[in-house]
Amino acid sequence: MISTQYVSQVRLRIDDVPSFDRYPFSLAAVRNLDVLKLHPNVTFLVGENGSGKSTLLEAIAVSFGFNPEGGTKNFGFDTRSSHSELHKFIRLAKGIKFPRTGFFLRAESFFNLATEIERLDSEPGGPPIIDSYGGKSLHEQSHGESFWALMMNRFGGQGFYVLDEPEAALSPQRQLAVLSRIHDLVNEESQFVIATHSPILMAYPNAYIYGCSEAGIRRIKYEETEHYQVMHDFLMNPKRMLDILLGNSHDEN
Image (cartoon, rainbow, N blue to C red):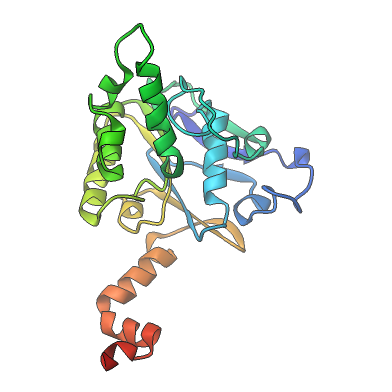
């Protein structure tokens, strides 16, 4: 059956991998990867730092045609080539529909993206690019404000969006607002693939959640994620958790 979603699955070309003993193929999220099925609406990649979730997400974005440092397909800046070669060894199964728009957000290189927009707008010709991002310099806003401006102004319906830790500079309240914005865009036929540590974002209903660990990568339920379990246990009894973590030292002050 021909899929109508923008990307239905990610397949590792196992026979072409030179060695699973070297980076990035040695990463937990990659070495046991065969086929990763994506939800037509929202798919999450979760796991500890170093598990390979962001490297896999980056490979999906680059394989789709996005600039490795982020942005749309029209961005081609290269501040520092640090992306892995994994995108050369995966194949995206695309549907019969093509997205009208799209974006790759990397929290760690968003500053570089904002700088590139200012550089391009300093050149003559054409309307200012920043107008598509709300009209105000992204450098003149906080990280959280600039990301919110991106989601509200640059993101639109019928889009394919790859987001790497979008919660990095967002308060819990703003994360809830982002969750609502994602839902609005899903209702406008957009698809998201997101690497995150946020138990708020990964609570999106019916999403696929893939946990990356030393055991590999597998689909799990929201309540099975370490992020949910740790946050749940802490909020249910913060004093008990603090007693364990601090050895009662906080009572001595």
